[in-house]
Amino acid sequence: MDVGGLRPSLERTSALGPQLERVALLSASLAEVAALRPVLDSVAQLRGTLASVAALREPLESLGRLEPPLATLAGAARLIDHPVRIIVGVIAAILAWGVVTFVAVRLAIGGALARGVR
Image 1 (cartoon, rainbow, N blue to C red):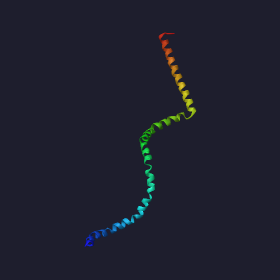
Image 2 (tube, rainbow, N blue to C red; image 1 turned 120 degrees about the vertical axis):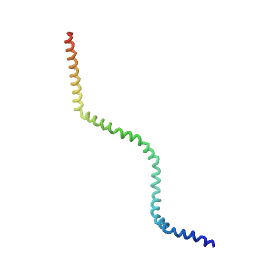
Image 3 (tube, one colour; image 1 turned 90 degrees about the horizontal axis):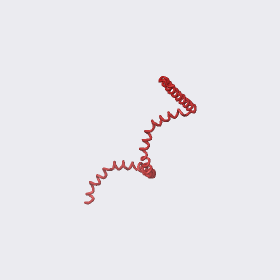
Image 4 (cartoon, rainbow, N blue to C red; image 1 turned 30 degrees about the vertical axis):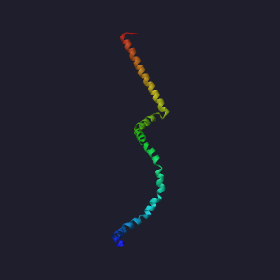
């Protein structure tokens, strides 16, 4: 009588046969996943390092925003890469200063002469 009461349960269990066969086919894949455990453990040990790298995100983004000004500065630095350019620049600055000084003195003398101061 007790065995007869188990019949519906046993029939439902036997109906699970195809699903259980598919689960049995997964055993090889599950064994491969289990073989990854040491690798996954080593990845888990990287958690602290990865947190440190994540903390660098904001400084790296701010450094990335500096690229255009640094490129402009590098372009300006090319002007002084050659000593000849520096010398030509200094000579041009001295000549310009001399011309401005000459014009200023000339105008001052001309103004004084026009007022009659000798």
